[in-house]
Image (cartoon, rainbow, N blue to C red; front, side):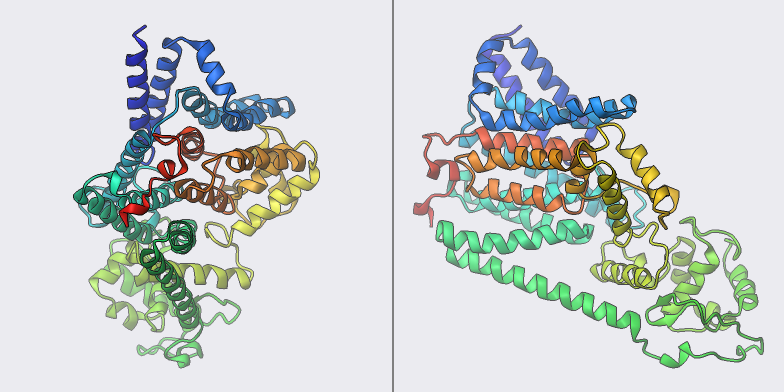
Length: 533
């Protein structure tokens, strides 16, 4: 339609926009991807594009992943479900073709794409901070709500890649002037802070591993010793602080300041009898929630102080009476009218909003997240239903997935039958999880095995690993960071069961496979100059 130069310009502008919108909008990313595909078709020269693509076996292997999902439709009874899965996997087809069939990208162009991606992630983090500060009209009940634009676990992966690519660019004097490099370092620091407010467990673990890995990489690979040792020390300090926080939180959950409150009292200060439920083991801050309960007094005093009825639901959809008792227990008080009367107006609002203790009313608090995890583990150890508990319901996901793999070890369920067959497997194993929480594997390795069978899982992983192993760029810092993020995330997420996950994977994987330095040398591709340090 237009000249080659115009189509190449549109192509590169589309890639810039795709990188920018990836952490901001699924819809806009899809729109840009469609525009890129239209431009590819309109640009013609198909023979030349096919020749370029066929000369890049890594990109062809990535296309093999999409081909597997397409082929496994043969083993699918739910064709509508299969087509929906293919829709989510379209980036596995689009970006290896769009990027893999284009002429090589220079280091300058790759830097530009990274700049755009870092900017998009910075904007997404800024929006999260504004939501946390109450500037935006977004209700933040949980740290995950700070991911305003895309799901939190996906955003945490993108933020991690943005942090460490920004670090990479800030250390390279050829990335720009001093001001730009300082801005990149500041953006990396701000996004790291946001990551620790977002409190995605997967994202934080990946961050600490990458921080420690970077601390080793810089002295060994690039001989940047001071920066490397500083980052390694920071990673060690973060890991130590995390372990201490979890240890202290676990201890506070099981060792109350006043153990006498866990013993039965006879009467309330008003002369009414307490009721005790010794078989109930629910704890808040070390105190038994169902010990020393006088519901008559709780009901009367609560209804006097709040417009939400005691026997109704809080704003989170939970039984308000249970939320109230958990909150009072956390504060170290018996469940009676005196305790309700002692609650502050802020406490009343917290309970009305569905927060079971004051910590939960502080979204983005590491202490609150540590307490939530410790509380979930404690409940799981005691045999409580894990439904809705993000950490402890995962073993049920794995149990159902492994059961399904045992039933279909060779060819899996097929591309479209995973959701239906997993629901049936939850029924067969009589899972504790309630209907709304019977979800996918939340582990991409298991997800591959469920869909393709065990041989198919091996094939899918080979198609993922081989392009990196065969690439001359395999030891470059951004590529190592990227491949580490992908394979670590797959332990705790269905990475390929979202358009953002597949777009992130296929966009940057293909780009890192095909780009060459301006003079084709490893030093130029690496983006670091020994003379700069």
